[in-house]
Length: 411
Image (cartoon, rainbow, N blue to C red; front, side, top):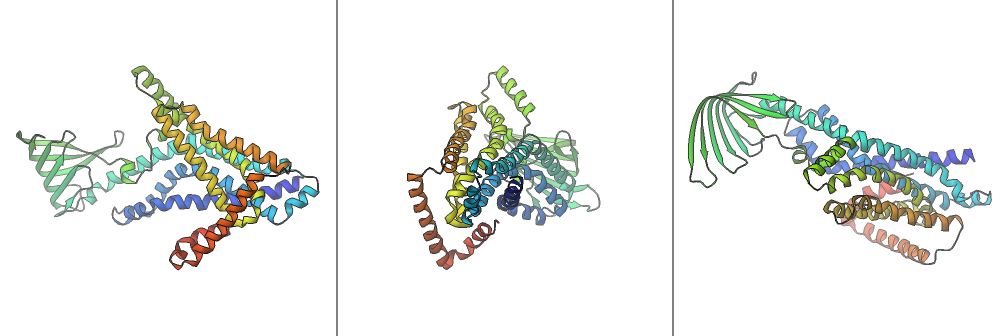
């Protein structure tokens, strides 16, 4: 039995690694355009871009690791059943319950990895990303400001520099047009200026000398002029999510301790803290999905063996979409307080674990699935019909090639 467990675990682990690489890579494609822009337009080195990718990877891995468990379980047991190995194992007196041992071992490993990523990897990675982004802005700010050109890299601000020494931070003939947070308009002229920064405060400032500030009120009726010998202008750095898409999501970058502190602070101030509670429960509910995905994947793979490798992959996608729709729906209800945050985040797990228990019980005892078998047959027939139809359409061949290649080569 130990040899069989090792054999199944090896099959599971191989597909698990491939599935994580494929799904994580697919998620990174969404950020590929931004990373390309950062390298070409912003002059950021490939080394720093690689570090940025590593720092934001935990935010993707907390989703792709549980997905990898499901795909591994479905694809592996589908292949075992299709190759009649399941029949041989049953003839040898080995039940499905015994074959679930390596599945649960992989699921437990995935649960630990996901929990580690959720508790430590994501908060630390997000913070490291923010610090790296600040260092890039701080060290490259001088070089981003080109003479004789209008620069709008800083939020609500346009900067023009008449002369700039490429070998020093000193700039001459500075013109700045700014819209303040109060919707006031300011025009700043300065003879000289240079950048300074405060790493701890995440602030970039411009030290201006010998200039004039022209301020127009938001009602456009008040106009003021101010002359200065030295003036410190604070530059508003774009937030990481504004620069790199939705890489960070509010409370998601906070650790458990920080979330609890924020909840207690909101309690004292009388502020609602539903979103913080949702995020706190999410740190445990999403990793737990790795355990139940492995459990539901085995019977699905056995029952869907005749749909083939790509069919098994498609069935996995259906389960993933179903779970995450429930998760997003629960999150929206939890954030607004219409559903208790605990129920909002754990309800998808409860639903899936009930379905998984039912499927395992039925499959292990070889009870017939009357409605399930009928629905499965219709699904497989529809799947092959759609697959033939799409592949026969030359306009869609290229778009489907990569998906089918990944699906057909998972094992």
